[in-house]
Every structure is written in structure tokens, then in C-alpha cells.
Image (cartoon, rainbow, N blue to C red; front, side, top):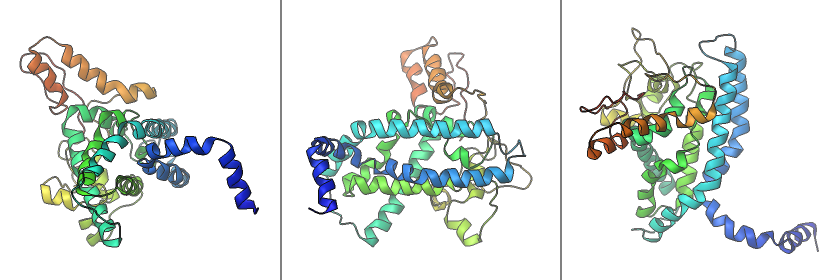
Length: 316
């Protein structure tokens, strides 16, 4: 028996092989999180390089906040790893079992899936800014008043429960394997990590026209009225150009990062939950039930006419 066979024999006799056979399908969809785990050391290295460049500029870097940003990202990864297979995978598996087409993965269909995944991301991202329920999870990412690589890691641990992953289910109904949908989504987010920086200015005009770049994404993170609700694209910026949500940075309007109603906290739990709390508080205010539940799907800044609903934080 060679060494490889010997190691496989140990694994088989351990009893864990049977357990893995049961758990593996639940984790299959979240191959995206495994990609994030592999990419995290790269993220840390790039973020540290950026930190050395801007650490003396408090407008661009706060060491404590940067550490919290990575802790927020770690919480997001943990809940995704623990619950995506239980919550999302059964829905994707159902959709794929009722698929319209049998799509074989090759270079052409892989490229098509990459573009379609970004198309779904555009609408998920746009809805995340304009529907308060989804904004409750997304606000965490925008609540920093600084733009750097650590901001990309500033994610909400409630994402898997919030339901944003439903925007990609139609791809499984069409016939794309859910595992590959997850891989495309993960690689898209890896790309998006690198557009959260102030160190890269404008790229070649052809790149700026087609792709989402640091310049475009800085505009997206702005809280200035002229920049709100723009540049939702993930990898590509062409969907924003197509659907009228593109905005270019203007020399006469310096970007102000953050949200319109800042939440200054060092608590990870508060950073994850404050908008849910505010939304529920608004819903509990007196008024007709049909009006109160509108807080779930109306824009974050929406106020009830018959109540004193506080305007929610909106960074869109």
C-alpha cells in the first residue's frame, strides 16, 4: 500500500468519510465562501500594503476601524459557511431540478454565466439600496466614512438570512449549475475588493467605460446628493449606463463617504443590526397596519404621511 492509499484508508476508517458525504452537498453551493477563505490572505496583504501608504491620513485610514472591518467580514463569512447550505442550497437545488435547459459548462457558457451573474448582482445591489429590508443588511457596508480596502470586508453577518441570494436563483431555473453560480459570484466579489481604494485614480477610458473601477465605485460610496443611487455594477459598469444609474465623479463635488445619517459605533452587533432596529421601531409606531408594513419594501428614506416616522439612513 502506497502512502496515498494509506492516508485514504485512515480517512475511510475514521468514520468521517460518511459524515462528509452527508455534509458536502450542503457546502457545495458555498464554494464561493471557500474562495473567500482562500482569497483572504491576499486581501490582508493588499490591505496592509495600502495601510502603509495611507496610515498617516486620518481621512483615509483609521486603524481601529480597519480591524473592525475585517472582524465584520469574518462574521459574515462564518454565518455564510454555517447557514448557506441549509437555507440557500435547497432552494437552488429545487430550481436546478426544474431547470428549463441542460447547460454544459464550457468557455462560452462560463463567460455568459459571468455576465449574467453580474446582471443579477446589479439588480440585487440596486434593490439593496432602494428597498429598506435589503438595505438593513447592506447599510453596514456603506456606514464607514472612509474608503479603503478594509471597507470591502465590511459586510453584514445577516446577509444569508436577509435573502439577497434569491436574485441569483433564476439562473439555476434557466439551467446553470448552482455551484458555478456561486463560483462566479465569489470571483465577482474578489474583483470588487480591489475597487475599494483611493490609491488608484482613473484607468484607460475603454476600461472605465466597460468595467466598474475604483473611480466609479468611490462615487457609489458617496453620500453626496448628486451621487446617491448610482453605480450599482459589480464587475461591469455597462448595466448602469444601460439603466440610467451611472454617475461620473465631478471635480466641483468632492466625494463625502458614508451614509446620510451616520451611525458611529465600535460594536459589531450594532453595526449589523441598527437599521433592523430602526425599521422595526418605525413599524411599531401607530397607524394602519397596511401602512406600517410598507417600511419593509419602501425606500429607506420613506416616511409615513400619517405618522412621525423617522427618516431612515439612506446611502444609495
